[in-house]
Image (cartoon, rainbow, N blue to C red; front, side, top):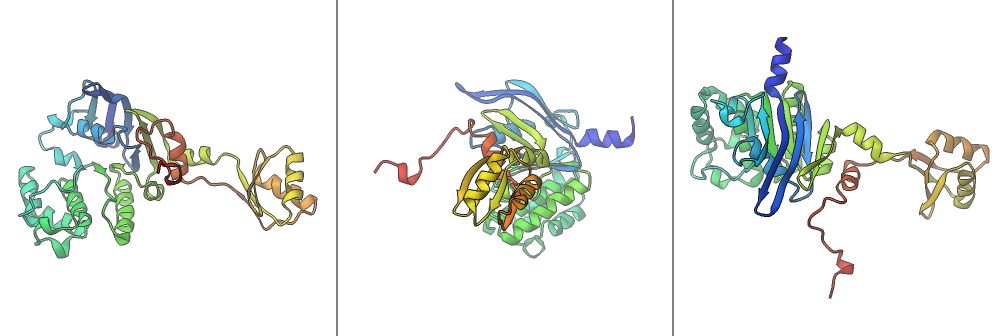
Length: 318
């Protein structure tokens, strides 16, 4: 086996057939997926879908009733110095508030046999240089997130798992986080990121594992998911709505009004729409293929997996 293959195996997170119940309620129902190195994998699903429980099982904090969760081919709890294999951030508040950020990291480093110089390296990586000697109890949520990320990187692990890392970050912090996650993947690391902010993952994740009601709904490249969700829909803006609709429906397109001067068309590619309108002299200002957002694709996938659904304000009882 090649060294490259060995390194890939070390970085892989593998979840197979996880089942877990809390009382009568199933939290995980056959959860199975693999997170591979060299890309950012988004881990998404509605509240109660099983994201946090899965991550806790991976880290050995919860025991599964059935199935296995492996890091580099072995259970996390069997690793002698786990931070050298998988760095994780599940709860940014899990720290000793009376310690400075640097002392918090030094304590963790000592427990894992990590040299003190590594602490200063991750402090700079996480953008905490100016706050390293401040007590962590006074940190904002965004600063605690950065401290948690610094802790996850202490052992220079081949795999990183972060739960909602965008929470509490200001716009500059969000931009930094996007670039940071992408850089970890470019280094060949395995990166698993749980988030409910689809807009952030759309610009960051290469792959998505979408879950609902304790099982995997989709395990796919983001580009493939968006292509499927976009379908063959075309948007047409025209001042001659009726004429355009007649021409396009006559050519086999399904046409719906999408606004005062806008039509939605399916069944015809955008190039053919342009050719048909031009042939019949129908004026138009725009013809564009619809590109679904990650949020649209996610909502479609999880429509039947939402456990808690609110009532629109106008439909609520008074």
